Image 1 (spheres, rainbow, N blue to C red):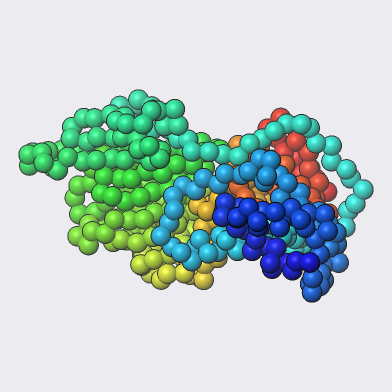
Image 2 (cartoon, one colour; image 1 turned 60 degrees about the horizontal axis):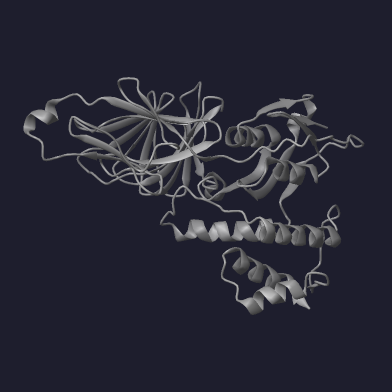
Length: 389
C-alpha cells in the first residue's frame, strides 16, 4: 500500500531523474494495484478511479516519451522553482483543470482530426538596422555580426549576446547607435543579453527594439508582447521599457511585462527591487510581489498583489490559470502553439477555468483536460481550433 503523498514524492523524483532502481521498481510494483490510502476524494465529478487512470497514463507516457522541459533560463529565485515543483505535483495528480463557471449543455461529441500541433520552441529573428534578417534558430553558434565596435554572437545555449568594445576612442561614444529588433513568432521564445548585461526573455509573438549600445542618461528599449527582464544595475543610467504607451523605469531589478496589443490591459509584475510604472501623467511605484495594471486606452494605473505563480509560469514551462476565461486561456495557447481559435457561439466564451499543465505537450492534451470538465468541446481543423459547447 502506498499513500498519495508518498506516491507523488516518488513520482516527482522519477521525473527529475533521481529515482534509484529500487524506487523505479516500487513504482512498477504499484502500477496495477495502487491504493491512495487515507485519502478522501470530495470531487463529485472526478472519481478516484479516473484519477488513478490519469496518473498511470502519465507515468506510462513519461516512460515511453519523456517530456523535456526547456526553460528559457534558470532564474535565481528558488521560491519560483519551488512553486514549479508544486505545479508538477498537481499535474501528476491529474488535477489539471477544474471549471469555475460551467454551462449545462451536454451530448455534443467533438470529432478530432489526427492533426499533431506541437508546442513552441526557441526561435526568433534578428533584424539589423540595415534591414538584414538573421534566423536565430537556424544560425550557427558563434559570431553573427561585427561592426562599429559591436559584436553580436550566439552562445552554445542559444542566447544572443551583444558585446560593445569599450576600448574604442572617445569619438566612438559620440556616434548614434543603430537600432536592432529581435522578434519571436507565434510558437517561439528567445532570450538575449544586451550590451550592458541586461537579460531579456521574450515570450511568443513578441519583439524588442534596442540600440546596439546605450548612450546618454538612460538605457531605453521598446517592447511589444511579453518579456521578463533582469536588469543590470547602473544607478547613473536608469533602464526604461516603453510598451504600448506605458513606461517602466528601473535601476536594476527583475520584473515581467505583459503588453500584447490584443490584450485590454498592460501589466507589470515585480519580483525584485522597485520600478516606476507610468502612463501619461499617472505614475506609481511597485514593490516586490505587486502588479501594476493600466488599460490600453486609459491612463489610470491600479496596483494589486500579483499572481506571481501564474504570471511567471511561462518561464518555468507551464500554463497556470487561476479563474481565467476560456478566451484568455486560448490567447496564450494560440500564441504558443501557433494556431487560430474560433468560438462556435458567444455563450462558450463565458466559461472560466483554473488549472496547470506543461507547455511542452501536444496541444490535444491541454484541450482534452479542459474538455474533461464537461464545460466545452473542441475540434481541430488544420491549425484552427474550434471551441464549442
